[in-house]
Length: 445
Image (cartoon, rainbow, N blue to C red; front, side):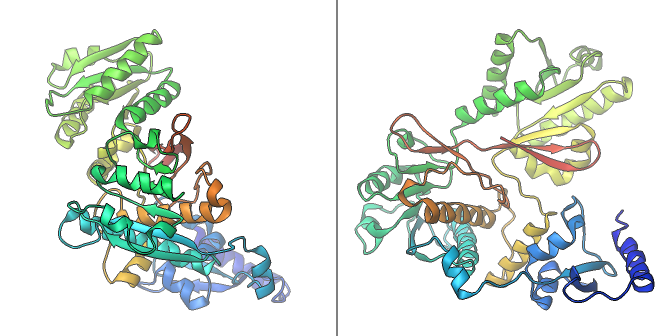
C-alpha cells in the first residue's frame, strides 16, 4: 500500500506553515495535482505541457511494480524541460541526412500474419514519430510482401536500392534473394522474427533478432548453471509426447553430468512417496518440466503443493519456458510462491508506466487496442525502430548492433557477429523472476 500521497500532504503543510515562500526559480515542481477519476498519465502530462517521462521522473514511486494511478492521489507536476534553441539543436544533431527505411512484410488484413505485421509496422511508425520529434530525419517506404509473393518483383521497384535498412522478410523462402540484394547495395537487413536457414552466417548485412532454438538453449543452460550452481535439480517427466522441450532438458542433463552435478528425474504421475524422493532436504531444489504446456504445469504445481504440505521446510524454485508468460495471469500467485524463473527474449509488463503510456498513445493513433499476443507486436516494432534508427543515424555504415537498448519497452537487443564473415545475431535474453515477495524483476544477459 502506498503512503506517498499522504506524506506529501504532510510535507506540503509543513512547508507552507514554517518556510518562507520560494521563488519560481527555487521550486522543483509547478504544483501538486490531485488525480481525478479516469485520469491517465498521458492526459495529465498533456494538460501540463510535459512528457510522461518527465512526470514519472518527478514521481519515482510510479515505477514501483504494481503502482496504480488512483483517484484522490496527489502527484508532483514538474516544470517542463528547457527547450533548446534552434542553434543548440543544430549543434547537437548528428543526423546529416535522412535514414531511409524499407519495410518488406505482409501488411494486410487477410490473415493473422498480415494483421500481426500491420501492428508491428504501426509500432515502428510510433517510434519514427518520436524520433522525428527528437530531431532525427527518417524516410519510410513499405511494401506488402505476402507469403506467395516473389520478393524479386519488389527489389526492382523504385527506391528499394536506396534504403539504408530494410525490415523483413517474414518468410524463410524470401530471405535468400533479399539477403543478396542487401549485400549488393550495402543495406542493413533486419530479420525481425523467427526464420529457418543460416543466411546470417554468410551475409554480413543481416541482423537476425531471434536465435535458433539450439543457440538459445545453450545460452540459457550456461546462465542456469551459474545461477543455480548450489541447487539440486529435479526434472519432471510430464508424459507429453508432443513436446519439444525434451531437447532442452536433455541438453541440460548433459551439461550437469559434465560438471559432475547430481540431478534426479521423477514423473508427474509418480506416487507422493516416489515424487518426494527426487527432492533434496539439505539443498534448495529447482524444478524443470519437459513440456511448456499449461495443463501439465498445473498438474506439477498441484504435486508441489502436496509435497510442501507434507514437508514445509523444502525450498523449491521453478524454472520454466517463454510460453509460461501466457499463463502468468492465471498462475501468478503460484509463480511467486515457487520463486519462478522464465527465460525469454522479451517481457511485456503492463504495470510499467511507459508501457501504459504507449498503450494509450497507440489507441490515440490507431483507434484500437493492441492485439492480445505475447510479445505485443506494436511494442516489438517500436523497440526495433528505436534501436536501429538511433544506431544507424549514429554509426552509419559502421553500425554493428553492439550497443544495448536498456530503455526498451519489451525487447532488449545486443548483437554479436556470426562467424568471421557473417552477419549479426541478437544474443540478448533475460530471466523473468517472480520473487517470493510478490515482485517481478528481470535478469538481463
